[in-house]
Image (spheres, one colour):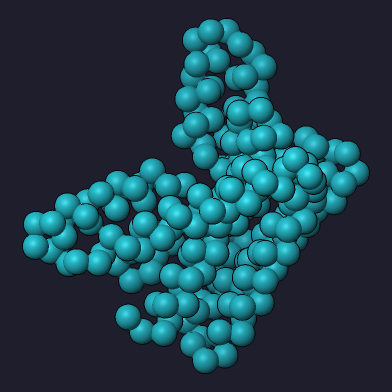
Length: 218
């Protein structure tokens, strides 16, 4: 594995931790809805439709819509910024900063909306490292690939191909633990830490790009 790939894997782990932290904050603030895990929101939406629970349908549907808009915006913004990861990370950090500011002003709904948009946009930062497909804000596919890689290793295939997928899951889980620990003390103002973390990632990518330009480019 070359230096660029190592940097990309570290970035992927940082992005997964960020997503876990923000998702945990949102989950606790919304009492069981997600700002990152749209499969969970889709299930809640469907159950809400079946049970006629309009509030659940409204919240889940709004979160799904915001996330998709965030993904679209992230892709378009990435092109406009010259497909530079550090710049897009800076834009995501700005959205999280605005979300944290909204939370500090008592505007929880605005904070949740901005955080959801930010996590949607985060998916445009990094999609692949070599042969490894990256899903920084969702882990179902990652766990499937982890299981497949373990099965391949047990069958005589590559011995360690499963490790990056395990590390991705652990990073998201660790970020979620951090978010859950922050929430009782800070509530959604814990988004300030998420914004700082994203800003740090953007700075580190820009610094690493001085030696390995590909770190900052698609």
